[in-house]
Image 1 (cartoon, rainbow, N blue to C red):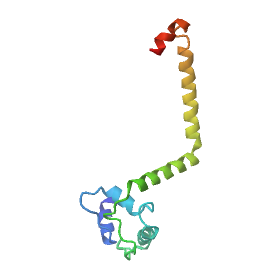
Image 2 (cartoon, helix red, strand yellow):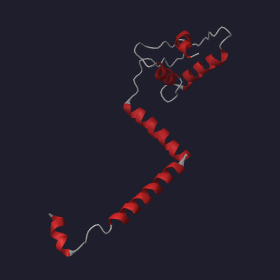
Image 3 (cartoon, helix red, strand yellow):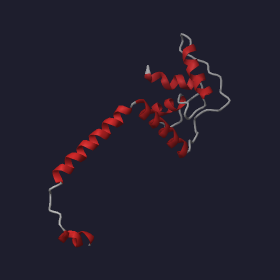
Image 4 (tube, rainbow, N blue to C red):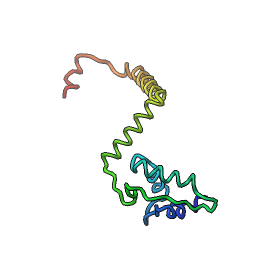
Length: 129
């Protein structure tokens, strides 16, 4: 149940800071791009080991929590470029399709406008100035 997520994460030692988007906070907790892999593993192991009462125990990681951590812009850009490179590698058809569509549309407009006006030497000076 999604309404219990805030209480659950608070019970395992990751209370949400005030004025924070819960979805973004939860994703940051389990994203090893911004948090140490050991901390992500602790959170995921606590979920799998939680008892029938729904309470889980998570020992504190030595790397510290992710609350209040400011990730540099260069790191964020690097992560996003890495993800985009993986996307291009995993789905090249998307970009090949785009290239073909751009090529066809450029050829179409080139054929439509090729005879739009006469080209003669008398227009040379007009084009230069």
